[in-house]
Length: 593
Image (cartoon, rainbow, N blue to C red; front, side):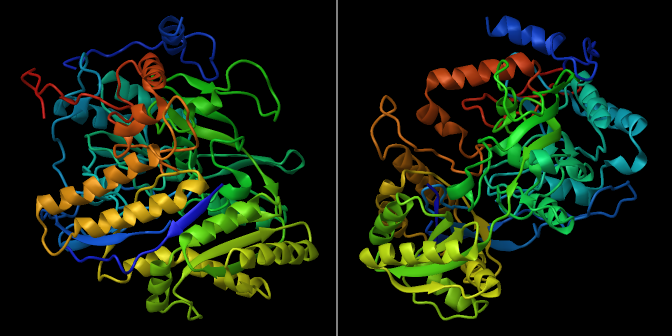
């Protein structure tokens, strides 16, 4: 069950190698799945309601210099890293997610590190050589060391974890391009990561010098199988654009997983994301990704399975890469499942408190009526929406539920609305408002979608600091109330001290611990997670053992080491308790941060 809780305003408290040797590749022909170094190693190795408080972070001044270096892909304006920017710490608590939310520039060649204490990454000289070789195997426009490019790809306004300006950005246009890039990265032991929409908030951007593989040029739909309800595409296509293309072609199907509009299919698969449609359609970890073409760290190209919907042949290796966050390989092609487009409408209802709203949701979901989405927006965010000025309505500043109904006919929507209205009133719901037409439905739902921006608007130049946890819906009120009290008790005000920042981090940590411990112990687990839909990255990896258990995390690490022998694929992410080590410098010495 997926209730997104969002709110913001009353708790807004202003505060302020050595190994340079080139490696040999074997068994790297495309499609080779039964032999080769990776397969051999694997065989051997495996016998809500938002609470916001503002902080202020002053970044160092890093002057951007013009460069004639080539640049490819859509240019994005660099984030404003030169001024004091209030950061809005927001928490969106929900049964599937809750939201909290500094990046700091760094030099082009800082110490590189590895997650494996027995290996090191290439030196700055290796990186320069690798960049030269990239320019020889790719087109000029596909390789960029432009300072603006490096900065934009290394930092995000959604990510409060420290970032870094990458060494080089490459823009592949095919699986073959990715193979070339991976082989060069492996030869010189240069960390490598795929860059998708850049919308994530969990420290998904790398903190190491590396080759950043921007997938935005691989944005094509390769095949549409309407009769089979599936589609083959490259990883750089955005889900919104893909659905628009299907609509323009008159194909009555769509892809229902709906995170941020800028999200790309590759990143969605890599993080195991979800969105408001999770109530009806589940998450990316369901059956929506049928297969994928992957370039492994060895340069081998595999396809995880056939396109048929039904198969019991061996492991479902597609799911091995869902949620792996680019640590096992780079996705270059995906087959996704589509579902029919059905009529929808929207309704909104207010409640005296979160407890009553939660009880109403439990009741209505148990009826089995056609609910596509249900979102909880608390009284504080409703107040922020009124102050934002973008809504055409003056909303009651109460805890509110936003419903999206779905059914085969307009008549079925009216029937669902009548059933839901009756249940809402039984639990103290008032002011039930059902959209009269599609235009009004769009307006009502926009108020839910704009709640985040309404919260940001309460503080000038604020930026989000999001995080999320997921708990059973029955535990949602307790989590919301306890976290609200925690934020109020912290009393963050005014200054920019490290102590204030640490208080913010401590609030997030306690919230995650609270969510994980809300129902029983690991021996009696329930649907509780430290990250509902934004992945693990850097920010949540410390909680994985507590959530999954030590044995499961050890298995994950075993798989990682078997597939990525050098530890160069998106290092430092996902797997907890990694030990950072610096690369050897030109003199050959090891160092530590």
